[in-house]
Image (cartoon, rainbow, N blue to C red; front, side, top):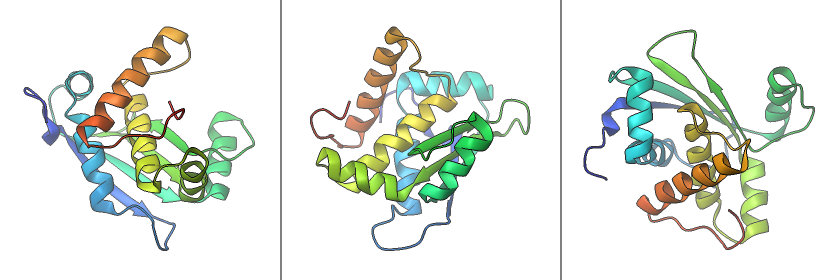
Length: 166
């Protein structure tokens, strides 16, 4: 944990619509997100958004079908994806937003890149959280900044990805 960080700003609720062997645990999900929230840049952005107050977020671990439905409904893209972030900028000020992850996509991508499903899940959790606190990758310079933040957060957890993943 980095000096000056405020991991107590983030609470995590995990909903597992997807059950089965290998699914990332609620404890690991929470640990990953709270560690990422402790990164100095992420913590600063989170504190700005929350005005220094604790906020909650929800994570739903589900399947390709639900991610496809969410992608179509909210982004008008009719295909499954691995992770979606939903920022709650207008609703409850104590709720940062929601993440939805596809466990089958995590397993496929972990096999494709040659690292564990847990490492792939951590990557997608961090990626989703970074979107919720204002990171983006639409422009090349933003993508570089988001990739650096992602790798910093994963290193703080002792997670390294297979070459070529990022």
